[in-house]
Length: 420
Image (cartoon, rainbow, N blue to C red; front, side, top):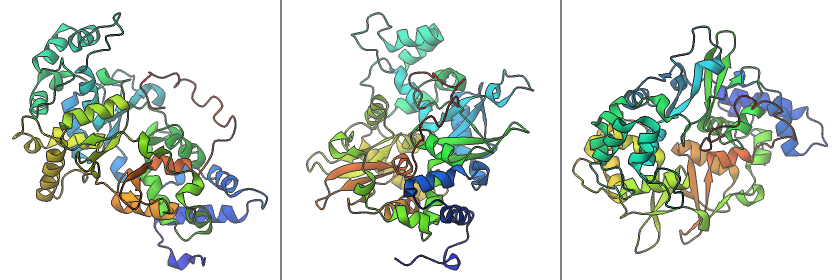
């Protein structure tokens, strides 16, 4: 295969970064395997070289902000997550004491859903209802508010659930710090500008972080926030370079993808209540699921935790429904986005690929569609697997033995539901 020349490659910041990897690739020892070469290249580049993402910088949420305020901030800046600043930290606090974590759009609603679910009857030593759980954690008034909303039952699926929620004292008064440590809550595990690309790639893949803040230790401020999507975009811009082509031209099966097979994929039916679909994702701890037509058993769509934002920011989507289904929800969101071209990011559509797809083709597809997952299907359209951004990054590099040393000291152990 003829490699693209430098002139043929768009000189975006990401492409220039790819050229830097190319220069390092050319001087690696011949006996090294391609993976070992890539590891060595990425270990030699500091994360400070990663292009800045203006949309993710200088956006912070104070720990005493309410859930309602946090949603407004995230929606207003068109981002899914932001660092949380501890308002009780002294002015001269180090970054370790200044930040308490990263809150996600989906995490806010997932926390609310968690409050609506009773604990297992097999654990009698713990509170057995949403009211008891809330009373133990946040006081009787909080629990009564949940009960007033009808959140004591796991079967709560009415379309007016979120309408009641967004006008409730629970939503208006609960602070961001109150949901710290819950599912979808990421610890504030930051990198210094001098840390390596390899460290960043491992955190985004093996250690399941959605984003990695990069700090300027001199000012103690966040210099950049690197996301999985940004890494995929960088890789897409490197098409044509020798180091990328040596890896990117491999078929999915050659690099062990998909990691999740067809029978392991969590699914929801299109006639199920959308609230129940979000509860399934919370319970199974997955970020998205395919939507299945009950009669044909074929996948007809995709719904993700990120789509929860539409229930919080676009009440017109559900106000006419008492029990909006997954199908109706997806239809209404598409209609809403057609009318509001400048609204928050587009709905994640159901996008597929075949098993004979190459890594390069898959990366370009993910980058073009701005999505986080692709479903692998056979010639009949039946689900054969699932591939996420994290899966792809995990196949780019590997963790050398003892690589992180004491890196996680002070961060681990974490709450059981944390991602890292």
